[in-house]
Structures are given as C-alpha cells and as structure tokens.
Image 1 (cartoon, helix red, strand yellow):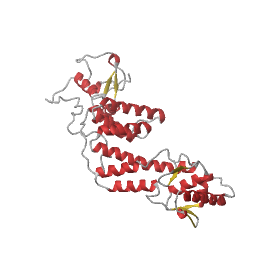
Image 2 (tube, rainbow, N blue to C red):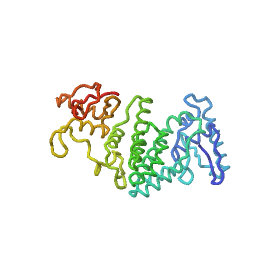
Image 3 (cartoon, helix red, strand yellow):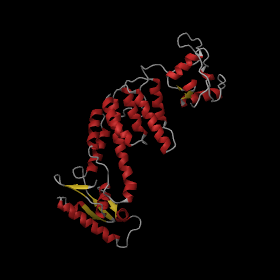
Image 4 (tube, helix red, strand yellow):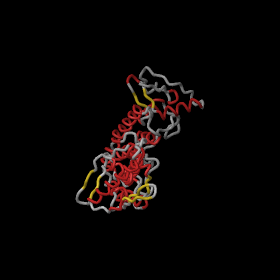
Length: 348
C-alpha cells in the first residue's frame, strides 16, 4: 500500500490520480520522469487535452500533502521535460530495500547476508500499489519489483538450507511455495528441506502436487531440475547438507548430495558382488525399490519416465531386443519375471 508517514502518523493514500503520480515518481526516485510518461500513468494511452495542466495540479496536491507530514516542499522538483522526486534510504522504503539487497549480495559471510536479506524483506508489505489506479504501473513496474523479491526470498531459502537449518526452512518455504505454484524453485527448496528432515513421502507428494498443477494450468511437465530432484529422492541419495560456502550457495543443482548414500540401481546384467548374471526377478525388485517402476494391481507396472528413456535408447541401439511398451496380464513369480530389457512398461 502506498502511504506517507512522519514516523508517528501514517496516511494511506486513497486511489486517485495524485496517488498514481506519486507511485510513478517513487518507483523512479532520483531520476527524471518525463511528463509524457506521467500522463500515461495517470490517464492511460488516451490523455485529455488539458493533461499538462492537470498533471501540474496533481504535483501541487502532493506537495501540500508532503508539507502536512513535514516533508520538504522541494522533494518533487520540476525539471526540463518532467519531474524528479529526491529520496534516500531514510525517506523511502524502496531505496532502503535495494540498498540492503546490494549489501547482502556483496558480502561473503552467509550469516551476515541472511541478516541483511531478512531486514530488506521486512520492509516488503504486500499487496504492492493496491491503492494505485494505474494499469501501466501494474503491468510494467510491478513485475520488476516482484522479481527483486523473488531473488531475495530464494536466496534466503538457499542460505537456510546450506546452513543446515532444514526444519526452520520447511516452515518458511511451505506457504511461499503454496502461494507461487508456478515458481518451481520454491518447490525444489521445499522438497529438499522435507527430504533432509526425513519426510521423504511428503517431499515426493510435493512433486506430484506441482506436477498436477503445471499440467492443469499450462499443460507442461516440471522442469529438469525438479525431475532430477525427484529421482534423487526416489533413489535415496544422501541426506547430508553441503556446508555453507558463502556465495554462491547450492544454486545450480539442488539435489541431495550423492556421496555417502545408497548405491543407485545396479546394472541389470551383472551381479553386484560376483559379476555373474542376476535373475530377472531381482532386477525387477530393484527397479520397484528404486521407484523406477510402480507396481499396480494384477502384476501391472507403471514405468518412470527416466527408465522409459533408457529402455527406448537401449532398443534403438539394439541392446537386448527391448519390446515396445505394452501390458503384462499376469503376476510373474520370481523365477518367471522378465529381465530388464524384456520388461513391458504399463500405464496401470
């Protein structure tokens, strides 16, 4: 909400033309804002014939409001071509917010960075510009502000995870991920936090939730990073957090670290100990246990997309004569179960 305060009293501006003018000047503080742009902010693309004089009247109303709250009358300057509002961190939250972010991103100490980021985010009071009637500002300026917030809150969660504060991170990330279901990075962070506190099933449930949402909203699957993270959790890779390393902190691939965890699914054609062939039933059990196959009713199976890709690649290379996707209609016994390359994936 756009408001003016003298430190003891605050006035929330009513939706009006002066409010739209003030918002445009504040978003571009310490820069010259053209009169043409300000007119479009206030009236849209079809400005009235008397827009120039009406704009000047809005400026005078703002100056009177500033005077009421002890703000210097020359805060809004008339300059050639437009107006400029002078502000610093002591007088405008947006300037203070950006200065704190700059300081945070410049430091190499994770705790100091986290402290600065939290101070910056404490200034964030949504909904932004809720009392500003300007389609232009809501269309062009708000997305830019939102990106600044996204970058800051993502970084906070990264730091929390890197410092090993996973339980605290779960409580913080959860509502943010729910409020931004299309922002997959929040779901990645939530899944990682849940997994590292031993809540594997809930982490996988979050993946299914966002997958369903993306399919319904956009008709797409989760991105590669989320898919890799799901597979890492299915495989039961290490739950150890990487140590804090200053900047950057675990920003690229958010998967749980692979070192020290259970071994991935072994080669279907070799015994893990003696190097001798393994029966098909053992391979099938390993694939089910790793989450690459999901066993359904009456011996039917659903194949994980990654295994489907591997199977198709093997078939294309002529390895093992893999059969095309189909269904199995009976429940095989361990001695009857097919080998990996003979397995028929299903959609059960």
